[in-house]
Length: 410
Ligand SMILES: Cc1ncc(COP(=O)(O)O)c(C=O)c1O
Image (tube, rainbow, N blue to C red; front, side, top):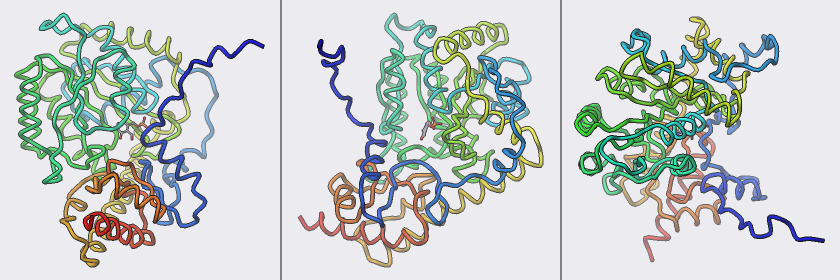
């Protein structure tokens, strides 16, 4: 028998987030706690389906035909209005292209493919480089690299203040080559939960304009971060109002709880409407060769919610409930650590926004929590606040307290 064609293939290293999730699944302990994956859980620790989604699901799909390569038009239009605002000048002037995508990741990947094929900064003959924040969502680097783009980083986080390193960020964006591609998290930065202030967003925009950088916004948490769809779109809208060209990846995984349905959108805000048809046709060509056309079910659900004023209000209410529960978990965890007199300043837990807290725990402490307490979080110290409940906060606080004492004693 000949040996396999694949005998030379090395095993790929496990994904830093999904690898931890699989360790969790294999742990036989009953009281284990998974804070590694970014998925909302209710106060009983169970996955939640939004009531408004259940309502829409009562009406069966009209058919299971293919949908267009660019997706469902009513979904695309509503998605881009949600992020840019209904009165956005670029929408009025018909200089925005939006295609449906396989959630946020698919939007980033199709956008990356387009940039690799067509972005030709005049300032250099080299391949365009994408700058992502340090740290960033673990998949950013892989998504852009696999499209053939070079990836580098700009400073983002100051571990001492547990906040955005404003000076480092502005310096880096000023010192990198002009016309670079900059990835900005629209809100609820993952993994740090630290967002630029309004003032800092304005300064970032000034540097972007001055250096003619091309911005690629990643919006994975609109409405889920603060509970307010408008507030979470502040940065994207301010950039759009300045008239610059940009790309936007949107995900409806978290804010509609449609994780596995893969609902997202990729938009190009262009300088003028004359390029729209060409950009649209090339995006469709990329989509055709990658997966032909996107899935229908999730986008149909999202489209109905976004386009029906009654359902839209119901959705907004549920966004408030989800974001409120996460904020409450932050508060309870902070109070639990303070009441245990756990060494350190834990105020960043309540200051940070969104699904995650960048706890400040180091690798040893994270591993200790996993081994002794069966609490799973990523090794950079990121914990999903959405995975906590009233019942599990005390366990997590006990674990942190113990881990901090163990390792500060060494
Ligand atoms: C910053 C960021 N971008 C994009 C995504 C993409 O998620 P999805 O592909 O599930 O929409 C995530 C998910 O965790 C994220 O945190």
